[in-house]
Image (tube, rainbow over all chains, first blue to last red):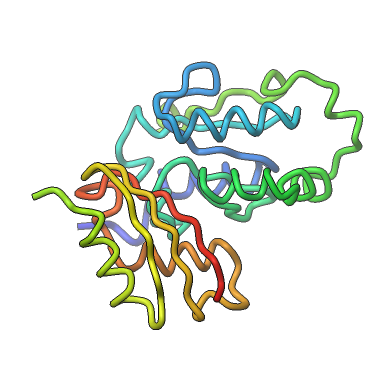
Length: 133
Length: 73
């Protein structure tokens, strides 16, 4: 049975989504992706040079379960920009190839173009939702 | 029993009105290219959700991974 009244993990996930302008839920970490789809999505984000936060869903299966309930999206990875689900690996790849992803990250993340010269990932503190339970 | 590309194709085409699907896969990882009039005017997210919705909880389970490309038509 799910408890509808208190769901700290779901609240943590929603909070992470709203607080991080570019947030990737993935299997593994940007340094060590544990799945080809997550790896490809990380590689695309890193190639754009935009800092992003990442959450590893693998340590606790409930993270993935609650995330999918929040996002209404069944698969991992999931990229959120400004609190909105952009998509998984397929959509991110398509948007990268068409230039839409660059636009979405450039315009919506609210940072000037110089940000592209900064090293990716380093700016983003690692999120570990499972440790905050 | 593992899923087959043919099963996925038939279910997508039955589940989304007017859809045509090309599905390839090895029984666990699948790739589907789907075109449907229902996609017209929808965001990519919404288009992909229509396809995922055909399979409900099976995606991530019995269907380990389903890669999707959608084309409005």
